[in-house]
Image (cartoon, rainbow, N blue to C red; front, side, top):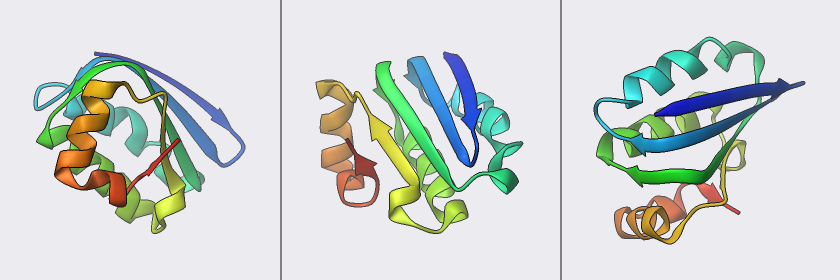
Length: 98
């Protein structure tokens, strides 16, 4: 998985390419964890994300709980495969999808 991160004031923009699964979620966790104290919102660009597993979903939930508000974790450019996974798991009710 490829991770690109940019920070604009209190917003962390994270673009992912590939698969977010058991093998790659620790990499994303480590990449984002260093920013959590200084940000209020994370915007994930899933345009090039091919798949998300339960490990990736769990990590999104951890970020959501850390930032303490639904609107503070946003997913954008979600493809149909990932959107279906989010819907089946109920995460479309937990995480803001644009």
